Image 1 (cartoon, helix red, strand yellow):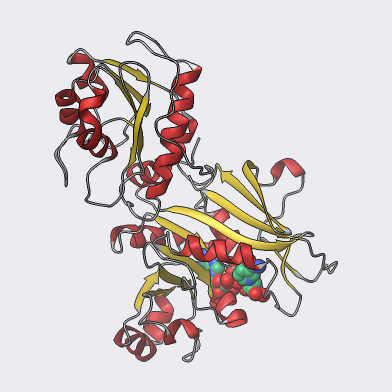
Image 2 (cartoon, protein in one colour; image 1 turned 180 degrees about the vertical axis):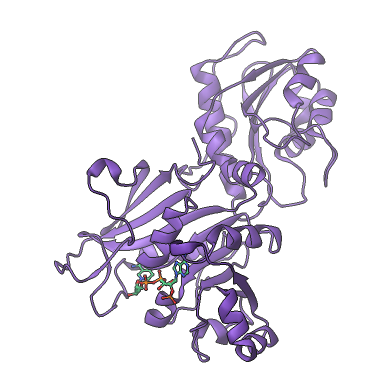
Length: 399
Ligand SMILES: NC(=O)c1ccc[n+]([C@@H]2O[C@H](COP(=O)([O-])OP(=O)(O)OC[C@H]3O[C@@H](n4cnc5c(N)ncnc54)[C@H](OP(=O)(O)O)[C@@H]3O)[C@@H](O)[C@H]2O)c1
């Protein structure tokens, strides 16, 4: 999802006229691309709902309006579009990245709004995975509208976070790291600030203000004493900080503990540590920390899946960004819990085989045994390059 590049769209642009019997075409795809770009504006505002974008085209083929789902609990994109432009769209077409909903949830069903508006055609980017809300395509077809369902990758990406949570019960995990050109996260002494440049770090803060949780390991806390808060950019939501700290080694004066008034904190430790360090646990809970005891899963360490289930079920987290070192990154990848990677590559070479590598814990004998990622986008940010990858081991990863 995060991979889909945004861009501005202009209203009032004339496109070739379409009649109501036109089937899937390059024009459909291009207008759906536009709807998907628009839908991205909801990122950080609408989760756990899906991001949705719409474009409305009148009966003469003119694009008259765009909309997107703006806030959780607020009107869906289709309803917003039709509320403002319904009269111009009578007999026209609506492009929507997600199948219109059929149920009355926080807001009324979008299929009702489409029928009331007298549209003749609906083009859908992807079907709704939520059984409570799906069925819109059939309902509209039964009512006599022409409905086209595209297999539209950007629409799938736009709803990937939602789809993943509905189908797996887990939040969408983006593994973020900054590395030198030779693949190192820090020097052998653990010095890592700063590998990436100011523009890259600003983007990280923007992402922090759009996700529900930021996950790190105790190794990073001990090395860098981070706050993991969103600073100097406008936050759309406050992310919970989450630390995997099996033996409760978090220092009492850690910056994470000093900033509990800024953002909440979860510490995931082992069941044994919680019992053995009950006074420390009580102290942390008393300070407002959510302390979670996780079971051990043999050699694999603590059950990280249980941690993600906890974040989803108890804290309603849809999106998690990791900002950890190679230990936790390796554990998350081994557990198949990463959906996406966001890698900043800086123009620095350390040339030290003892420097901290990006990911630990694998020992493939051949290149084929390595973890294969799929490149989604590349962007230059001053002298850094931002690479975004899909990770297919991450459960229901995006297409
Ligand atoms: N460049 C970057 O983007 C970046 C980002 C973050 C950190 N870093 C650097 O990375 C270095 C730290 O690396 P690191 O690997 O020590 O840090 P880390 O990944 O943040 O933390 C590793 C620790 O997390 C715990 N852990 C991870 N997976 C676990 C599992 N499944 N079960 C139980 N415990 C688990 C272990 O704690 P125990 O040891 O207590 O068992 C492990 O030692 C520092 O030098 C830091 O500056 C760089």
